[in-house]
Image 1 (cartoon, helix red, strand yellow):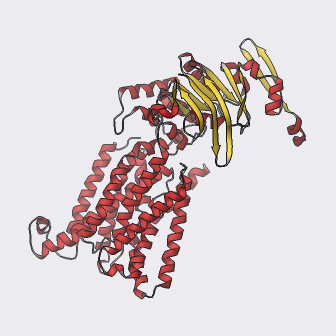
Image 2 (cartoon, helix red, strand yellow):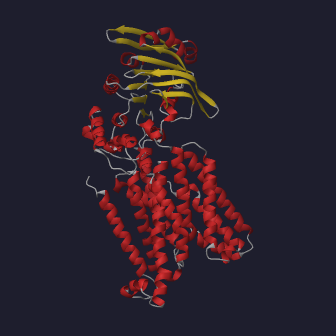
Image 3 (cartoon, helix red, strand yellow):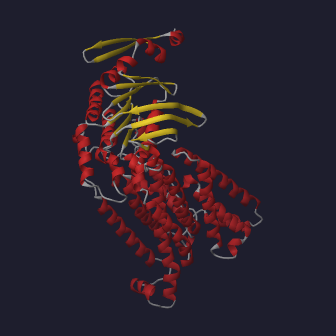
Length: 332
Length: 263
């Protein structure tokens, strides 16, 4: 079977991401020409510069960075847990960030500063990671991590529901519902500055675990005998994922399925090697999320279609396919 | 390399699996680890490989094992797990190449030594023709050979293997035993758990018999595998014969307690 070489695949994905990034800069309700739009980024051109720098640039940057974060973390978690159905959601990071957001909205903190809500969401994700780490114990197994993640996700979802239930603020429910649908709209460079360091720290730490993921292909015992310190690597993966995905979710809200679908689609193209899947999934996630964000803007721009809704609608059929495929494989 | 264990104790949860095991594995020795299911064979192998929390002393070449970094340890002690599940369909060459991880600096490319070690491991296990095959397109026996090649590619002086011949046909069982015997002759220290007593008796220089988390006998096969001891430890009546190349152990029927249960 002839297959695209790995560097060629990465180059293609990088070109795709670059093209979508530029496309994201060029598409929007303000009718700016291509030349003027790009020039306005660098040279002050009044309103055009304002649109480009304050609205489109943060949106395009967040699309690429958040997408890369979700794709990368999905690839890492699937590799570590040896489970193609894993993503950051199984660690309870999304739902605990949502709890942080709800607390900010209901308490009114969110109305004091535009960054209060993302900070609160980030704190929620951080606390969840600590709780999962404490619950999962010192063992090396993936199962204890998934169980701890599911337990924390259930708890935070219940607390979110309770908070909304008791909230006297009728708008809080609406806001949190919108927040859990995820969006890249109306984000500023302040949001980028808040999320980017957390995402960057996560990327850098995760970049070092590729070999370990390859070794985990043969199971925890063999990986350990090959010189892996499983407890340490697990802690790195958990906290880097919490930082990166927590940072991303804090500014965009919950965007599901990217972390699940992207590694799944790209796995056959990298020969299933977990370390190679990481870079490919980061680029693939950036491309998918930017594409979804462009879709949101091109289809029904007036109805404020939410990003997470689009990724879920696109992602769910892949999920079905994955399950059917697994079932066929198991029945063989 | 000489690997010794003194008063090795392993507890998992609130259960004690190994109760103070003393063992010495010599350079160039092929030692078989036998005993009933649940005797603690796998736990002993994993503890020797350094992958389990344990109490007691392990010494590798006059230095406590705890004093080696995990990478140094992984360049000296190789371990072949009983679990043959391969999570992702990598190619045979890629899986075998995982054995080189302890030899590679982070982010470094494969060296010539790595490629040679993989090629040699593929040759020894006769997998050259399957080198490019995906792991999910292999038979059970081919997977076992691929994982054995992974162990060989690690190029460790000490080789530990947990039931390396389980599920293999007779030809592949013999071929696998031959590989280990050759490594022992070349100066490696080999310690493998086995359920086939005849195979263990004919190929191993020495047998270590475990029961209930303790070593109950060790020595040359003919002194360990007496009909009385087999009856006591395994609860079976066995016929022990000998021909020119060694013992033949044929399990015949359950004895005592087991027998009553069965009838």
